Length: 390
Ligand SMILES: *Cc1c(COP(=O)(O)O)cnc(C)c1O
Image (cartoon, rainbow, N blue to C red):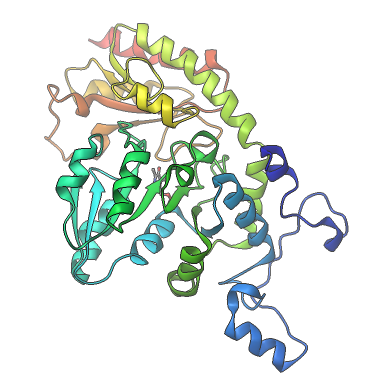
């Protein structure tokens, strides 16, 4: 299917809603029946009928079909957050006594689920450096049922060789889940590389305007149908019609936004790489990146998220740099229209900062839709502020 067809036409049916160009927000909790027999059928098979909007909803349906097509997947569920998509996907694939192999430092709420919730149900997790396929083999036990992947991750951009990992998983009957938030399906299609379930936070690029929280989970009809009937309906965290409508709107401009952001990011990268106060820059599609070859092979492009290491002797300098920015906002998240900064030291306990530890001096920059000069100009005056102070 053409990308433009998916984003502009696919799954929309204007004849059924007044030929309106924008689809309607079907803001209803429930659907009415003419006969008890129809109602009975819907109760028996909620996945094929409009019954109740915790399950299916017509606005959400348009979004689900478009997102599945984007990922090259058979089917898709959209949740009220990326975290809910992670929760449902993992929960659906473990039982008491099972073991998960996860990449080290996965997204923070995946980590919290693994460390805080799953042990209560006798499910254990081993964290590995996923850059080396041998580590998957080594960590796999007889009771391993799940590989949890995130490629690249959203701080240091470590990749897994998805083709190799999924090949190994298939030999052992292990399900693979991959967080694809960094790339979106436009820049990486993990299903085509063999991944069973691919998820992303739609809060980021899909929504694209920092005004809606949502998550996407794609996979085969079998798996998705099973998750719908159980975890999806039971957790009750499906996306609401209005937010689904916002995401459909976000999808219309996704390629244009990503193209612009990727171009601007190149200019920002070049600026940072020549700056004397920048020790190093991490970006998967920069030739200096340790896994550059794999990134080139596996990803079409890389978007607007990068990390740089500031030459700073103390935490105050890093804080002063961030607080000196006039346009780039200090905030979590990314993928919206606005550029953002997030220093790693914000997650450190007081007194834990160690300037000798490179990771403590990392700052994650998200490059938004502003002009390149506007962003580099802002960075430039903030560098100047800390240079004057030291
Ligand atoms: C934001 C994010 C999530 C979680 O998504 P929410 O929509 O915030 O719940 C998951 N994975 C990655 C990599 C993220 O950046």
